[in-house]
Image 1: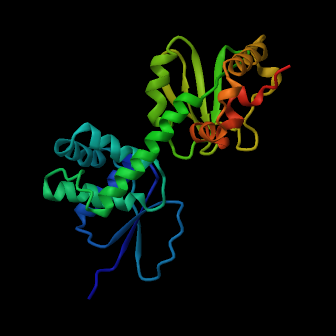
Image 2 (image 1 turned 60 degrees about the vertical axis):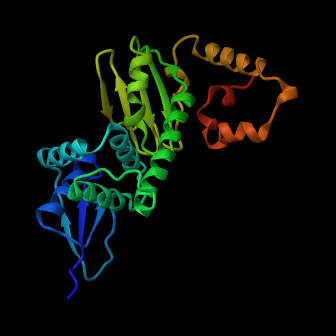
Length: 260
């Protein structure tokens, strides 16, 4: 008789996911699915269990995984998790479970389809991280707060946090992901995660009355500079779109501010 599949639901946090891995070992599950709590379960012959996030258990799993792998592999796992691609938890669960069971790192075993998938997904997320670090355009508000809205394909805010914290340590800033409705806010001391209803996918702009004096002039200056360094005879639209896909344009000052 086949084992009944157990569907493990978690709160979509990384600690929650690792708590599911602990649960799999604790109850010796062999047939399972790890899914976000908001996902609908349609399988009639599966049992569903909500796994509550347990920091102590998740730490035990991660600490052991870190003992057996290097930082590059750990970063790869985190990036793949942040992809939010449907089913990625099961791919990562398979990988982490195998590392812990066999007590060795086999992250370069690309003959294993699941390992290869993690490599490919992590690469996609890494590329999006770099794009966000390059494409973010801040606007200064009357409160001396620099605000930027983004809509990345993947949940990269946790990955770009350190980049902006070190680069803009002397000013308060907020980067808000309108797609996931949360942001990271730096107050000159620390970075914290916030949620707000200021922005939505259909409302990504700061109202004009909230912009600092002279902010629009700076934006026009930047747009003018961008236009002036553009050599028309060397213009290559195909290459331009390859490096700056059109879906990002509405968040770029140089693409939205009309030149006079």
